[in-house]
Amino acid sequence: MKKELEWMRRSPQARTTKSKSRIGAYYKIKEKASQKIVGKEMKLEVNMARVGGKILELRNVGKSYGDIKILDGFDYMFTKGERIGIIGKNGSGKSSFLNLLIEKEKADSGKVIAGDTMVFGYYSQDGIKLKEDKRVLDTVKDIAEVFRLADGTEWSASRFLQHFLFSPDTQYTYVSSLSGGERRRLYLLTVLIKNPNFLILDEPTNDLDLMTLNILEEFLISFKGCLILVSHDRYFMDKLVDHLFVFEGDGKINGFTGNYSDYRIYKDGTLKQQREKNVQVLRQKKKEKEKAATEAPKEKTKLSYREQKEYDQLEADIESLEKEKSDLEAILGGGENDYGKLEKTSVRIGEIIKLIDGKTMRWMELAEFVD
Image (cartoon, rainbow, N blue to C red; front, side):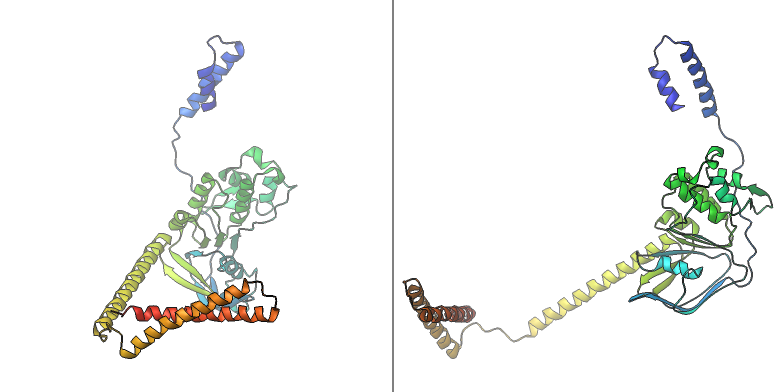
């Protein structure tokens, strides 16, 4: 409508038949665009597979890649409906941990035990290799013809695709013609249409448009199974998780009850406490230093008899060395042809310079107390 409105504003007064046809089309578009959509919001509640008594358990699991430790004797038992967010620096082992859960990778030690009824849905950063010569609709149908909702109704693969913004025309195009964002969206569908009861999402917000994220968020809010979410999007994570695994590196994982914002408040508070503690330590050290200074013996204000004699001798020594240095430099610059003599003279000048520097430093120390 905006495009047609722009044309209307710049269109000349004299209209051709073609222009009148376009004008009529504009008013129809305007009427449609001005309509208010009234109706119940469509909820996408998944009818996931039944969850048995045992979900997933990790017993003393260890995993390393060379010198890089990912897990070090990690223990955890997942319970029904858990919603866990995973945070930590890149390279701390988050993706490797997820691969261990679905046994895509094997642990070096310990056991990963999944319940018999577990159906994992795993959306990874790497994605999957979609068949380029397949149509979008067929890609989804190969996994499931229908998607079952919690109320017992069934959606066809086509309707499920439409819900995730794939128009009927797009559904019949080949995967090779999809954009990068559309491929990620299609990959997400291939994970969700399996009706998993344990969903693992590794950075799902990357490369997905805002509308798709809203649909995904709605889906996850109503999801009743276990959810593990890795995301740098704090707002997305705040709405969906109530517990965190904090990957500290070197195999250390800390648990935290709350969402990401709760964790930041806690973290900022502990950092503030640590800073205040450091300030108190520095203040205490300063007080101790000041106390030691007041209790120290009074500094001397004049030279002793022996130091006075040393001071006088240093002045004479420095003067004598400066004269010797000057005489030797004259030899070097005087056209002397005896190489042996020139070498000895050069070595001696170096020795004299060191002696002068040392005696000068000592002379300056003593000079502070000379009346």
